[in-house]
Image 1: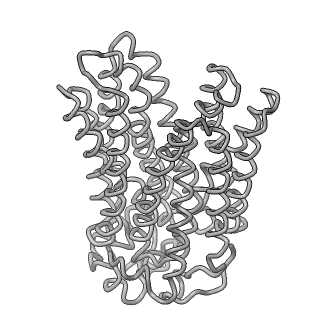
Image 2 (image 1 turned 90 degrees about the vertical axis):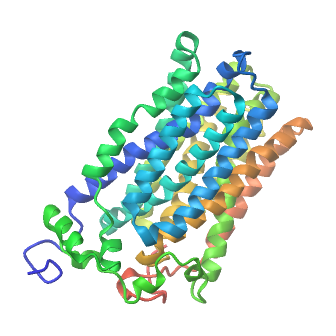
Length: 443
């Protein structure tokens, strides 16, 4: 008897299944964060390598190439993932960015190094939205948001590891060693994907691969009924036009603008916070430590936001979090006692990074399973324009000695993101209806 019909297995997601998927994806997103942040962490060592010949101006261009590659990767994932499956895309993304890291480690010149960072960006852009989609599919309904925010703590942890490794081995082993450190885990990552990460059951059923889906369901003791695709799912899979049906077009545009604002903040603040704080009168040591504090706040904020989103709905918490980010960044323009500034920076990080993550969690509740990965890929891809614009905008303000205006501009970006999410209707699409019509739901 098929588990679509059997009452002998649970119809709810298996705890073992969703924890296994979350654990594998957490490790992969950790590698994603490590590879993303390793560039900034190694730049001082690269600049000291006079024989290599990287200049600050070219370094900025390469940083932009990497971000543009992420944009292309996210958009490509959004189109392809719902057609060929999540597992292949995740495997491809990991292989691309880890091999690119290895190429960076042995790059004979700057052009090869730049191309490798661009291709790494494509792999990074492919992985993140697809991993989020996988985790949300397998997490229990009451734990989907905490699953996503927990997943994103790996990104911040990867950044912290990149900084720690660079600080400890660049002087003794050279900057290239850090890229080899980032590439080495591919020998663990690929087997983990092949042997521990199951394919999306929703994708397999929608594409008619019932036997393979059945084998996975039997292995984990779950019913395929919990993952059955909605009617006409095969016609929707991978179609960007499905994001612009009458029921969804305004939702899509509003989330795209919010994601643009959110990633503008994440990348703009992460890039320019130390410089802006130093221009505001803090010494160099304090200014750099603010970057560590804001990212630590981000990890704590992810876990808090996820729990609240599961209770009150991700959209509602996202709005509140962006408003809190606006006030937190605005307060940084006020020269306060150092301890109070640290508190503000920590809290701002808690709101800022998790607000952007909650956009992804919110998006997943507004689109049916057949186009969920498409919607996440595109909201991530469009947001990458903000990731390019934020650092550029901060650089313009700093170059014109308008650092204080930077706090105001970033606060306004947080307000715009909050307004965009608030304007999204409060009735997300229900997977249970099997249609694109909205039904009552929280937040």
